[in-house]
Image (tube, rainbow, N blue to C red; front, side, top):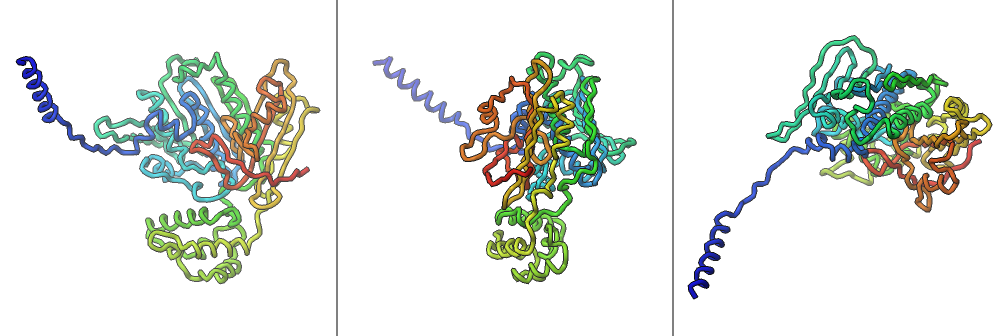
Length: 475
């Protein structure tokens, strides 16, 4: 009986201790800006695992370089350099603006001059440079840095985390330097000078796997899809150059007005909302007529007047299309309808056609046989314009494996972006397998899509959504 009493007494005592030791948890607030400063989030942002980040860097920086040159109407000359301490991409464009760099280093916002527009742009996510800036610190917390040269300044940018506040700290050490264009270099501490295997990606074994080949293939893809560009690659002293085949090649440029026919109602409202928010921050309230003037076919005052009369928005401010935090959908729909009714749809050819001759030059330089080269082009019949170009050839080298290049809007894909399309939803790899064009075959294949408003399944732009079949051959 005494043992039972003692047992009950200990149980009561333990229960009292548990009650007195109960923790009342505090809800802590941590800045979301730290999301860019860890490997997991950068994988989400880029759509690629860490061992593919060298490819991500090259792709994003070449995209930006080509866009900058296209906007300035300058035939691009781009140099990619890889050595034991890092990777650099340099161009002959007008130079990365200081304001753009400042916005990229503000991790609390996303800044983009692409995202709200519907156009045949190389990228439209608004996060490329923002993901590149912290990448060196994640790769090498001690020696990682990003070095940017433009407009007479050299920015040496190091990122770190304040371990107490969990806030990112970006140190920008700027100095004057003689420079032209833009040069962006991702650096880390070299483990063994001159040794490609010393890159800080231990599970991407460059000498034993296809690391160098993937870098070279990505660069070759950009050369295939940009006839006006001269692109040079220096891989640890091994130099490859692709000279421009058509420096004056015509294509849709990022600075050209977009077409109202490329927008749906939600998309035009997204653009209107972006303008309203931007204007409020600058103490401005633009007229609807100013907004209309930025579209293809509506730059003339007579056309604008016709549009405004048709939808009853003459001398109306853009902000008046939003009331109480919501759009007046009827008015924005009338505006879009009037803009579309008074402009002609953009023909597919205006987007830009790479052309058979350019593909032929590049494929011959890759060692393909001239008699095996075939080229095919498809244009949209109606609706949203697009151009699909494919080039195929047999390689002359014995034991060669398949060379495969795929991309959209003159940007080369790191991996195959055409994962699913058509009524069956099967991807391009399934189509190639059925055609006995697997990775072990000695062929070369290039597939390119030019189209406004290309939709991606993720922020890393790794896979394209294609649900259209209304195309016709254009011989």
